[in-house]
Amino acid sequence: MNDEEKVGAFHMERRIGVIDSGVGGLTVAYELMRQLPNESFIYIGDTLRCPYGSRSTEEIVQYTLEMVDFLLKKEVKMIVIACNTATAYTLKHLQETLTIPIIGVVNPGARAAIKTTRTNHVGIIGTEGTVRSKAYKQALQTIHPKMNVTSLACPTFVPMIEAGILSGEKAEQVVKEALQPLQDKKEMDTLILGCTHYPLIGQVIQSVMGKTVTVISSSDETARETSIMLDVHQLLAQENAAKENEFYATGDLHSFQRITKLLFENAGETFDSFSVKHTIL
Image (cartoon, rainbow, N blue to C red; front, side, top):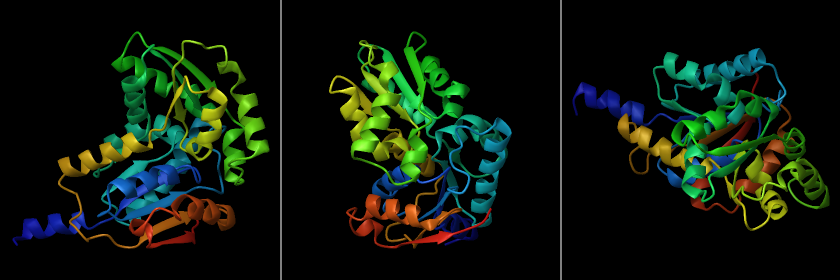
């Protein structure tokens, strides 16, 4: 193996970084780990300052850059922004400034919705910040200019999910009240979960919306695009190269650990090796 090949192999063995405003990005991390079993991951959720959706643009940018800096110090080979709000406000800047590949969750989610819809009427639910950015609407209409898009902010969802309320009467009541404005959109056949927290209450959302609406999570499509990008940059890890996966939270670990366990406990041997730790940004 020559020096260039040695350097390439060294970079392949590095971990992939995943960032989110809290626990929501775990849904993306889960799918990444499922589709890329040879890879290792470092996840950081900014649970202390979650939610980002009600934050100012300056705060969203600052907090996201702090998480990115945390991962760069860990020498990750690629970063996935598993937060729709952070993607909307920072992805373009980070793609222009970082020397490693970086992707977000907005474009993958938009492409998945376009593949699914038959009526060309797509709904988007997300944080106030994501809806305010119009990132999904722009992504959808860039690909399909005549796409009819209905956006709705659901600010009550993330605090409820971060508190660990993922099902039951309270969750159903909160979701039903928040999604009431979408009930008269009869032509809307596809709904994008424009926040990576929302798949954690995906079954409740699907129940409220009914069988005629297909609920789309960007996690699956994001994992596929990550795989493609790693391949293009010749960064795919070799077989049996996976190391311990590290999960970090900036706030209290109790809820974070509980939701992590709930999401991964039945995932099989791929997810046997990971640790959950506290960190300060």
